Image (cartoon, rainbow, N blue to C red; front, side, top):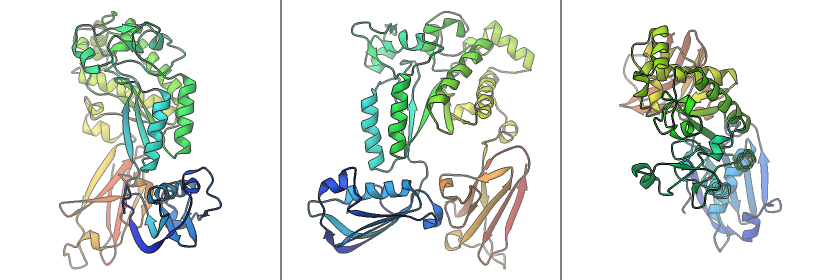
Length: 425
């Protein structure tokens, strides 16, 4: 029986429930499936479900509509020409973030293709689309305050990204130029895509590049680059306050379109060469006591973070967003992730296998439990089973995310073992 992803537990009981395919793949299964929403089911995990198929009918039980939806996708995968095999399935996602990254800057996909992709994602229970909307390959989202981003730099001379990037004719073309390659999403397109994704229980995380990978921006608005000329750099001028006006204006329009808690700002592969000789950037470094240009990148990332937090959102980016930031500074910021390694001992001081124990983990104060399976935490603070930990070299790993400044308290209680308690700031 081929199911992707494989359910947590499946038992084949024999026989088939005979049903027409239209009742499985159509929009109305009300006469075929008994739906039960039980908020206490599976500890309240919104994505888990129980599916029972007998020769007499189908029952699908979950704590939320999301769980029911994922159960329906399993039914679609189970369908055969004989009907649906009789099974008992208890399923729970191993990972709360099940995603796909789509780069529409280098290779543009129109709205209709994105929606087809969302259909396939939902079929395989993927719940997050990270969409890369801006890069040197072209700007792909309408901005009311900066119309040249789509009229001037959403199209280029060559469809093959590698040929265009490596070739001598790395140029952009105005919208409407015959033979130009590219495109962009209008704001109405984005709203339709977001609504379509939401109906399939998929969150969309937009990525808008700062401070690098922005060659196209400076062809449309060269004053935002250090040289003030197009085709000279891919990095914003950090010493120019207009760069931050642009950043906040763009992020404001993006936030209006995407309800995602997380907004991706890229932050990777900034060249930084122009910053070394730019009078504005060097002046900013002197005024702020910066020792190297890595700190200029950190300066912009930090301002983007503060702006997003003020709007009720959270910043994420590639690993280079930590360049120019000390560990002490990073660990004080909201969102910083601590990995805690714990060795469990019994009452006699002998090491025990955490995999064989029921464990309760609690984070209080300025921290909250996090990690790949934070979606299974009760109220974001407690985990009664094993969902917030991973094993490495036999040790228990606990992931804690900083919420605010202040002291973080973590308590770990394993059955028949002394409590492990720790505090840190």
